[in-house]
Image: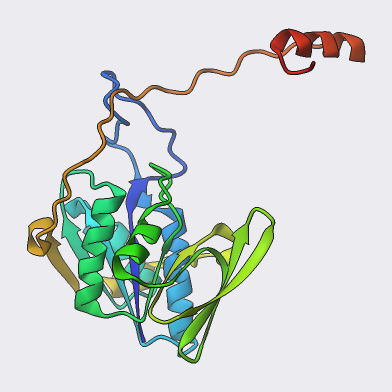
Amino acid sequence: MKVLVPVKRVLDFNVKPRVKADGTGVDLANVKMSMNPFDEIAIEEAVRLKEKGAATEVVVVTIGVAKAESDVLLTARAMGADRAILIATDDEVEPLGVAKLLAKVVEEEQPGLVILGKQAIDDDSNQTGQMLAALLGWPQGTFASKVELGGNGVKVTREVDGGLETVDLKLPAIVTTDLRLNEPRYATLPNIMKAKSKPVAKKTVADYGIDVSPRLKTLKVVEPGKRQAGIKVGSVDELVEKLKGLGVAK
């Protein structure tokens, strides 16, 4: 069974975002970019399935700038992906556009399972996996903390507000990963060198005939307000009075 893993190139989680002076977005010039952490978990899970013999091939795909080939896709191949697909574009593609492109890739690759991060840490949309499942008409298991393949299906343990929920899905299916699913392995230097020989197919958005024009317009981006200094109170009665003044206690 082939496993397809979509990944995204994002601002590294250790880097503090800076807003552009004109407020049009986040400044990405000369800053470290890396793979979305949830997508690293997805790759790790796919590679583990291959190591167990449940999967035969792991294919990784990304939609973004050409530089993604030398960092994100290289890391993915070093972690264990067999080959990669780069759909090159300099424009930002919204989740619906990403899902439509991925649906075309799925038609070409015919994977038995698609595993992707539940959300990207730059926009936190948490939409692509669900949209892809809807476009394909496939069952989905989101926020997965455990994935078990067996027979013609996959059992997914999901993290929900009330605790854990287990769903049985028929293959092919979509799974989105949560933080507690696994701990991704490091891409070691020897594996990075080996990964450079693994194939990368280069495509463009035009190759798939999909309209990825943005449907949303960003009016302005601002940094969160600075936290105000707190105050100390001398008693519970004083605390209650202060909270009443804030409209918290009644």
